[in-house]
Length: 65
Image 1 (tube, rainbow, N blue to C red):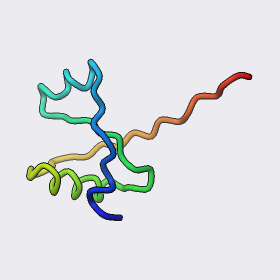
Image 2: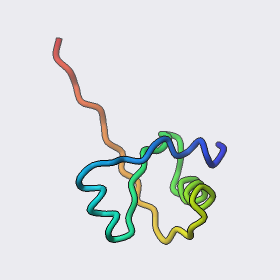
Image 3: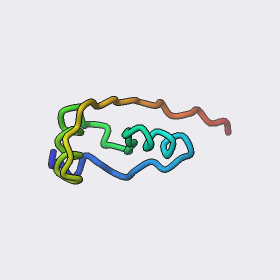
């Protein structure tokens, strides 16, 4: 997977803007990407060195009809 296909969009919420003050940034990423691919993509896109990557998988909600 190409490094720039990994990052889809930044997540801009109240909680994520508070995390930015501590140097932590949130992105929506591809479902098939692993931590190493995320690290490479962020380093290439923003010319920074990444210390740590946390990945959270959120399951979809069930809907009633």
